[in-house]
Length: 244
Image (cartoon, rainbow, N blue to C red; front, side, top):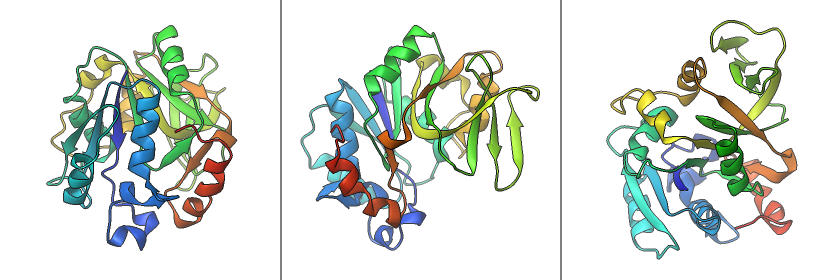
């Protein structure tokens, strides 16, 4: 597999740490989040990784260039324009071969989830996208129908719901985990990477005709370290078995 690490964000939830460095270079036990993510992907057989950069982009490029990695790591440069998740994936994917599955991974996620298992499930089910999810009480939830296919998205805070086509009466509400597998054919279905856009509305459009499913994992196997409080919990999480 090939991979994209989404690392271009402003990291506003991690301020003041991100006032002087990008979120990806914040450390846990003396190692940056970017190192942990790259090494995790490399350990599961990833041949090529694209990292998108924007916030303190020069610092990110220097860090990546000055390290020896166990796999090929290249940069998708968003220093002139932050492209959001959708645009970021579209641009980064242009640096991949597009002849094998792509694993997309947020840089501020630590997990014990088997990435190979996500790819295997993705291929077995012939999905165009497979989203890692778990039962967590968050404001934003993905909605899957009785066949396990994406049918909507809900923002509880704003009381807003988006549907793929029409409202579904019976569905499962579950939180997205910031890790997902995509078939290369999805890339061409996304808008051009000349403006920022979110990925979820685009996935809902694609899900009208293509299979967008989920890979459910235990909440205890996952940690979002995008805020100071959650970052503080990272050393203990890693001590209890993070595969890196």
